[in-house]
Image 1 (cartoon, rainbow, N blue to C red):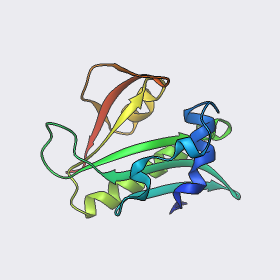
Image 2 (image 1 turned 135 degrees about the vertical axis):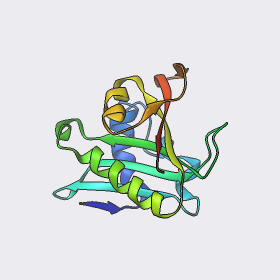
Image 3 (image 1 turned 45 degrees about the vertical axis):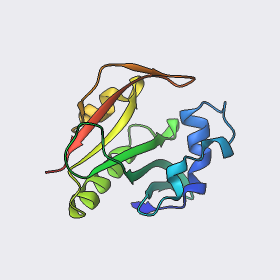
Image 4 (image 1 turned 135 degrees about the horizontal axis):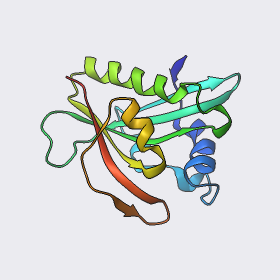
Length: 144
């Protein structure tokens, strides 16, 4: 079941999955984590977070309507293929559609392109590099 979690509970997965342990947990705190309206979602596997994602209000340049940015999406590698990430994306889409958001967007890592496409996201940029993280493309899910 998807539930709201405190961002501090997400830092271990962010560090190990997104940054391969090369960043301390403190270095995995995003400035947007403490913004009003930011929604941190997680799915637990027993007592451990199995999948996470953080969503905050941020428009994508050149797009009309209320935008939501997804950051820090990660799933424990041992739990991949169990639809935990899909559950988070689905929950967030329903939640923000009710808040009259027009779309959810993210900077997707190359290794996650297929995951986002399978969940209805479309490419909206060419590839670009983020230092120390790798190749990305912006992807977007229309909510209306």
